[in-house]
Image (cartoon, rainbow, N blue to C red; front, side, top):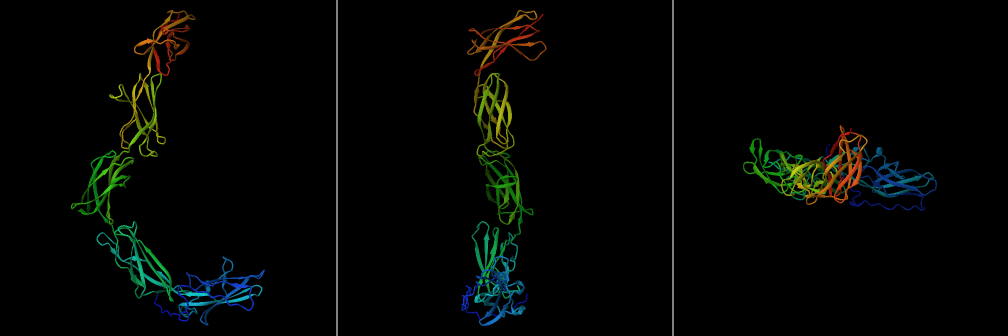
Length: 551
């Protein structure tokens, strides 16, 4: 766009620059029912203005609104008809087809400046009024920046840049732009995290074509840049703003590293050693962030180290209680440098076993329930984690696994079951894994008193079919030695030859010497036995059955 010569309107020099005054409407000899509000310039298109008009006459509407624009007593533009807006009702605006322009752009306004607006409104019942000085047409330039760019892409070797842009004024009506020369523009650098320093603002003055380059900025971290300019003069009014976020030229390094462990418990130290190179050559003096990781991403727990003259580095990491991670990560920590390497490392979280309930049934089977979870994170969810039940005869030594299961994913609960036992010491045990540390439940002694039925005898033998079989035996409990167990319920069972299921035949009680005598009817060859079903403190009895031949 060629440079234009702007003629400053001097006829309105007395008008305030910062405040657009609105003169009161002239009084008619008789008050008109038609009213006119203040006229105001549209800021985005200063060749347009709008005004509110109304009538107090019942049943009447405003049918026409016209305006004159003048400098002193000289009319520089006439608008024969303003268009009513769809909203709000009663608001009238210069139509875009009649936008006011400079004479050099095909309009009638002689120069950039500010002009008085007179408005005339008429209603449908013939009422009319004219408001002199209804407002001011702010026919000034609107400041605007062209797109802002850095003059160079910063790098590790050269971290300085200048931001460049152009300041222009947008003309009313035509939208043409003209340079705003000799204006002071503010450039501000804003680091993302207010580091390494707070916002910095530097100023520069535009040249003849409005072009402007900022003073030199250093760029030591990710930053954004802003250009700002504000003017309120006879020629231009308003603020201009432009934003840019420059990219950088990265310095790519190759990181190689290894850890001295494949698994570290909470509190244990892991040493990671490595080297940084660029195109095969050592990179000394660069920062490397080494941390515990997850899925190849570093965490906040780590150490930043500096490479030595040969590009080598060493970092020591400590496992953090309560954090379940996997792996280590080494990343270039210098702003312009990029590089990344990761490796395997199991970092099991601390675990605990809670709510353990252990039961020893009368049939000798053990059932243990409880929960397994992360010590420091109750909401931790994990794949089914194995837990086992250990047994020891004395509760101190000789522990051995007797059952294993997995804690459920959501509720973290488990149930362990064993076969028959005569009792002993039990504990729930989680063996150290890559996910969780070793943990134990409480040691619990499970015991019951053993019982047996001895001297089982079924008679007569042989026996005739349909005859009565009398079965006797003595119930004993092992309470400091085998002793008679008196007044206890017992039952007589029969197992026919060739069958697998025992049948209940009769019930009774032992006498004061633990003796039992029960009867049944002989029907088939088979075995007879007396059994005691145990109670909360006793096991089920053992016994040797007696076979009877039926003839």
